[in-house]
Length: 327
Image (cartoon, rainbow, N blue to C red; front, side, top):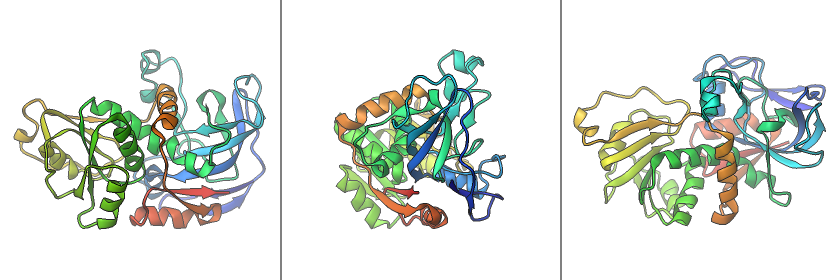
């Protein structure tokens, strides 16, 4: 098999040839059709997230075909198309798992972080954490749904049922969740890097009611705001944009430190909450919505060997939508 491997944090990925992995009990081997490139992959490669398992194959937005079954797997069959997300396994017995909060499991495995992921021609996954996907869909279009879509969905649920939703950072997650909001009858206010006219036009093309720079004040108070950009300075700006009783959701796995800000921004029962990982219930709920909302992902394809180029384009903000690697 072919793989792009992180040997040392902060260094480029290295191409390797490896024997095909053998699935253990409860696992499957998947022939990867596509794997999207997520900002979390950047955080892993750049060292923002501590203690990745090295050497490591990154990637956790995997679409592929089941190629081999480990013992005890009866829920899937060879040839079936599945999606493999960030949450790779949970213990099932810690207080969080037994209370329905498996996203906070004390002993988790994460695809492309603590176990090898999908920047490769083949990948291993626990069968119980893989999800059936449409057999006739474009795997490149499906791949961003496996994290950008899922974490966007969990963030939107955390934001509540308000009509006016602000989104700070208009990348892969934002472009998907804007379509969900439009389908639900909500209005999206998109905040981009100051002066990024192309991103603002992109947001409006997907249904955003307003788009401007993150340094701008929206024309109306927001019911809630979701921050996808990993920039702590956006938190007080978002608090200033939401109404009394409004909520600010931090949707990323990593963010720069929050600055000090006056208590008046938080007062009047405004809230700041974070979203961590995802649950399998999130995946089932969101994937059921995708065809109803007619979500269309915007993607840029890269060959597997160009993984470093894709990461560089994401790091530099040169993408609209999502980068996707194709073995």
